[in-house]
Image (cartoon, rainbow, N blue to C red):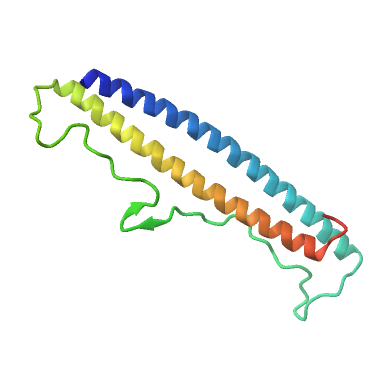
Amino acid sequence: MIMEQLQNKDERIEALKTQNATILAELADQKKTNNEIIDKMKYISDEIARRSFPTDSDGSRLPEIPTDSGVTVPKKKGSLVGLARRASSCPSSSQTPYTDPMIMEQLQNKDERIEALETQNATILAELADQKKINNEIIEKMKCLFPNEF
């Protein structure tokens, strides 16, 4: 029974590592897209400045667009949103057989690793969602301001 739990936890850790790698790749693609948008915006801004586009009353030409949003994972009642409580592996009415403390330590370590990977994935997913939202807002604004360029 305990060996089965260890194997299940190993499988869960590997699945989370795979998911984490996929999410990180998607985040890298999203950041690349974001940088391309910013580069295009800088080019357009330079073109406008070169054509001496009218400035605001304070002399600035275009507002600065933030590139880092300081993403945080939303919290609700002290826990990460979207992560459920872990159910016990055996019912409370059953008697616990003797287990080797070393194996129990391995189980605990695997639980901690799983929780860390789940937290990391939740953080990355929140950052990715925020990055996509920012990119879409920037693209929509740029389409309105410069319909011929986008």
